[in-house]
Image (cartoon, rainbow, N blue to C red; front, side):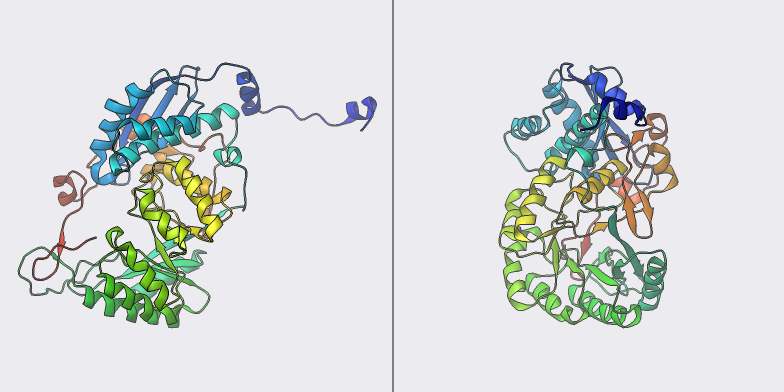
Length: 439
């Protein structure tokens, strides 16, 4: 203990504006939800849904990601017509309690529309809490486990030489992890452009044949390991386009190339086959992008059948349930690798980064760059440096939404004609005989 004279001699640190604002709110009654709004915008050509919660406390509000691009209009209606009247007048500081109430309010649960709507509200409430406390969400959630978030980026090519060139550029930018995808001649492969070759088929639409793809993918990974070296971590996304038996074959065949992980080798309907893959090989497995329900991820984590949980945070209901599932994964040695594609709003990416910072069992983060239009709408995006994402240290998610700028990019802006015709939905891909395949 120091004397009063010594204490008086210590330098005085002036309180920041954030700290003053936080002190001013202490002892006050909890902020009440005054309004729930949806900001619908597409600055990067993808339909983004962002929920804004406005409280009765002057200047206190928050943003959350509710983006489900393929059914954006339904999510927006669910927020405006169902969750908004349910939430008006409720205290904004009871985040987990409100999550449970929203989750049970529709009786039938675990659907993508409901989960994304809940996520938008849930993330917005965390943003409100952070702004009220004057600190970023990762501090509210316990503080950093690491200084920044290691990421992987996407390399692709119509053929192997083009892919190798793409991967080398990504590595030169500082990334140590690279997802590699290659086009299959004449087919609608995932994550890479196809060549102009034409395959004979019994229909005129997009074609995909799993056996052709598997041969191309194995050759691609073998070449990548030889030409990119031993130090780079390779990732490949199957995107659930093969049969369960083919999935077992593929996971075994790529084991010698020492992948960081093989992603979505099975569809959600076929997850029981992960037990067979585990019995056959040691290829690291990532799964979860298409999951909505605990019934899907719980057995995979609890039985240690996957190495990386890959869920889309808004599809599983937001920041609140993601923290709980990450904690479950820590117990079972399963790491996080949250889905981070372009059709997640920068608010959602900020939530991913916060999770990455506070979870001990962080594995890797998928990175999709923000274009200039997205940065115009969403001010304060996480910053990428040498393959690492850095969180914004402003209160909450650290992001402000320029609503006037958002209005400049309505749904459909920048979309292909097919996506516009399908109202943002995916088209169909079929085998040569016309059988629809999963994608």
